[in-house]
Length: 65
Image 1 (cartoon, rainbow, N blue to C red):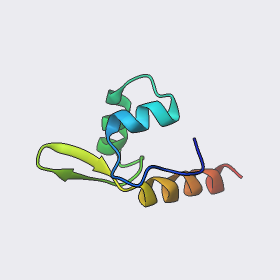
Image 2: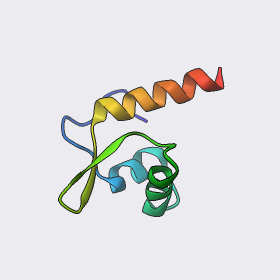
Image 3: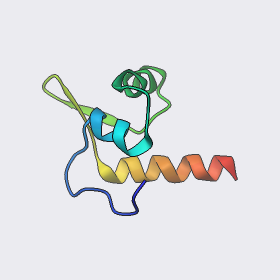
């Protein structure tokens, strides 16, 4: 993942690309299981704040250490 995240809210597709996930369904599974980065709805669309994604990545790295 690049050190600089885009200066906009991220889509599930963005997360698939950034983390090289198999599909968008993985992002939705993380949401259902409450294991991925915090997301929010804009109407029927799921979005992620880049700061929340970075915080989630940092917490995953801390757990792995």
